[in-house]
Image (tube, rainbow, N blue to C red; front, side, top):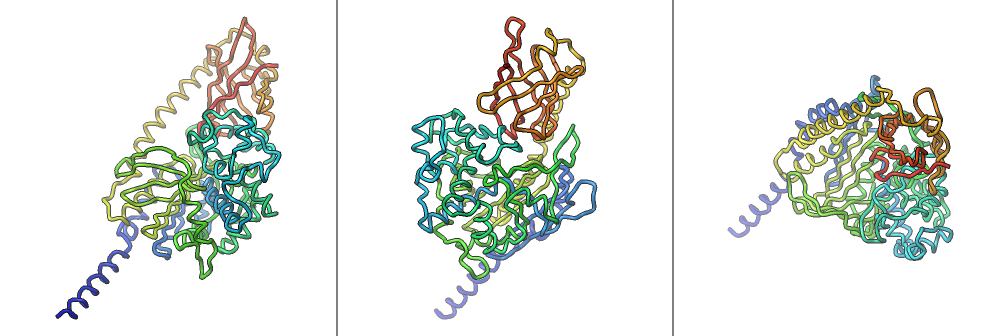
Length: 506
């Protein structure tokens, strides 16, 4: 009788285990419908989705097209720019060098980059490798990014200008997402390994993981064949936009990859660093990158229990329904992407899109997580889409009102030639305002591929429409004193940077 009971118990446990491994019906029955509907809602030309469970690829699939208006379909091998999901690769590279005893992550940056300087000498001497990649340098989120993003600056010039910034907060007191910190990390990797950042990644990660088509630099991405092209809203219409070179900040966001090849990275991340029978990433390296270094915020998920968000070395860390979520998102001109791990469930999810104005890339991952955790279907995408529509309408109306003011051709209290001239920002450099017939043209020293059209809208303000839609349409207030133009504040879209730059007339 006892023997029968044990056999029965084993069979019961076995059946429970088999049931637990079944793919949720959301994946088998509803995923395609969900994705296709979302692509139509958000006007996303193309997307790719990956689900890895228990070391096996459950879904690896492309949807839609590479370019709006074409019939060139996305497939599982189509490359997308993955943006800041690059950061986990850079963090892993530093942790690998520590594993090889070539550095310690607590080492000071100036130990390896003796010429590097921050504005505060004490911070220069104290800044360590963990600080630069866990966003605890005292900067506001995106602070300084306008200066470098899609600019003509070299990576060395990026570091020089970054070091001149005045951090908005005290050192190590507050989280502030700092892309340039990863540019510093790239220089450290090069200094220690003797290889450029991109070559080190290829040698130590891409090739061992058989990510042979994955590109480290945006310039290499442009030259690849099977690639998704970038899209965003231009004057209210979803449009194809030019590729942008972001290689001066490469270690923060320039990798291009496909769901097929990222699956190798995900499988290794969920299997203690092993892929295809090889131990590619030592387990202690994986643990090191996921150790919390910075408090991001206390958080609440809109539907389920979530309490905090932390940051490791290129990974965001949060709790969700009692599970640890290791994830990151990525956004570069024309692309937004997400990579998510649920280690306790041996679950990995990747969503890549070629439209930078959608929340679907995040909402789908929560839907898939809920399905595997046995939670109710929430329809996150529709919930967020309805909010986004209202917000977009509000923003569009604000821009329309500003454009209406510009179209009124309000006569300024001064002649445009008095406004025209060269303006200086001590860190960025110069901005020239060139007088045209009834507007001013903005020329920026370090952004040769971009211009701005400034139209007067009253109250000493000009409306600037940038030629690169990523920079937005923004109001520039001008400082007038005794009828003389003294300065103006330059703003860009929050996608680039939140803080303004003051340019003073020569």
